[in-house]
Length: 136
Ligand code: THU
Image (cartoon, rainbow, N blue to C red; front, side):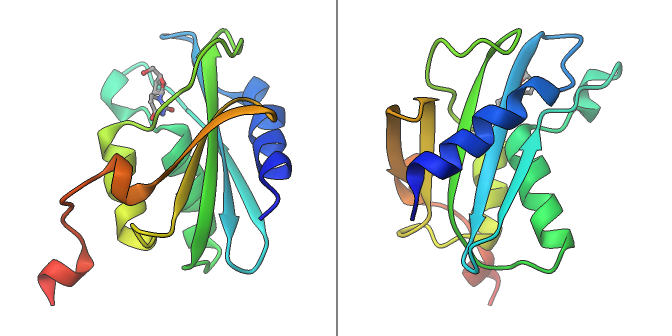
């Protein structure tokens, strides 16, 4: 996996975020097992709860295109699009990842830059999780 390329894709996508209410821009780049990369950013709404996060935007675009196997996601964000810290996925996004990604192997890169990032598995970010196997 080319981590720098994935992080750069997330960073390049950040200015497009639609965040007129919080002014907090978030972007994600999702690496599919077949090597394709899907980006997403947060899309806010005047009715705040209708907002969609960057991570789910990327995942839903990929799933809508028929992708079902994923390796990693890079996430970055910051106020007015300026990255100052590591931006961790919210709980809802972690649960949506859990639907499609293997907890022990799916890697999440919280990036400040291509050289400065923290890497975690989904299992580390969402321990003791509930997933599709629970309903078998
Ligand atoms: N946000 C994301 O896009 N991803 C996250 O995981 C955390 C929060 C967005 C939602 C909202 O548009 C803004 O950040 C402030 O919460």
